[in-house]
Image (cartoon, rainbow, N blue to C red; front, side, top):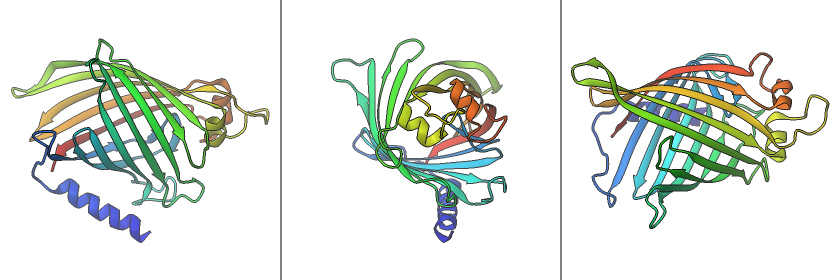
Length: 265
């Protein structure tokens, strides 16, 4: 409890502090802060918090290497943790372009998931590797492999997206763009067993599609900050997964909306 509250104070100070420290070149360390408010927290189709949340983040980048902190702070007593971090993620990522093939980008890394106030959730760690293609629709594929609690659990995310710049203006100097995207997630047997439990008939859920996410976002800059207003439709895809009601009845389809900002510090 004390550690979680200390994190709240620390992150709040960072988010409210002014200044900018984006790296001017790859030989300098760049810092970024993010802060998002959403009407609920959905992760890979799982309805983890069915009410308002605050999700701050802090990252440091040197060249292609990025270390980041991200947290989910419950803003209501929906899960009995109002004002506390229900999840803290620590990520180490290395991203770049494949030598000689500029249109192919890659990322590799690890994510540690910690749940400080939820005794029913097990802390775990994933390794991941992804590739993206700099062509229309920006297709990407990322493979996550759990090396801790959900051993041998694999989750694969396939995504497409496109950005339209300067679609309309909030003011003479405030153009607004439109980003659209879609992702589809699949989990293998080990992954689905850990996150979704048994099949409705008591058997095992095999490899199955998990979630489909459709996103529309409106990015713009104001007062030196980068803002994004977003709306997301999230639906469970696999038949067995939809029937488990693992995260509550009637929560197979969700509409998630929110606003966030990012800036250097």
